[in-house]
Picture 1 (cartoon, rainbow, N blue to C red):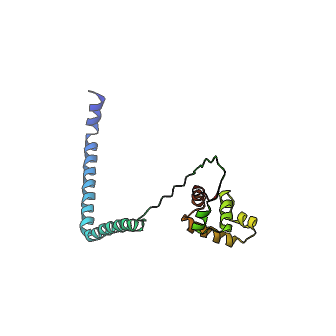
Picture 2 (cartoon, helix red, strand yellow):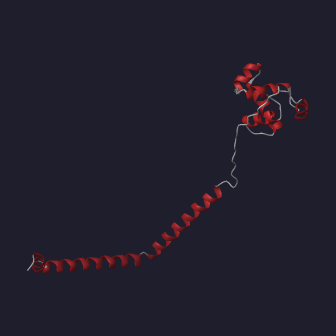
Picture 3 (cartoon, rainbow, N blue to C red):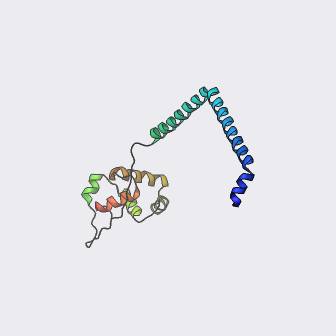
Length: 159
């Protein structure tokens, strides 16, 4: 006989006893689980409902707190190729009611100067510069410096 068959005969009782114990242990655990489930069925049911309502609340909060409108601002550089010399459109300046100081500030903004640098060059306060810039934004109907410069170049207000 082979070694395998001899090993089986030799340990047959031990193997059967081990399988029987494993089956009994499995049966006891299964009965314990059933007992726990039946004994605590109400608590498990309440816990399951709590988990569902928590997930629903999180989903609803994320849905309600998300902004409805998403604004995307795309800024682009516009290169104006001018062969003729720059001529200020005076009729548009009077139509938009732009002052001399606002045009100076617009020119300095186009050159890339900060508010502080503009105030120092024109010998005015920083708050005055900010007021003029805000007025420019309203008159040109823009929200950013780059938009104001681009629109002013398109309208022939600055070179």
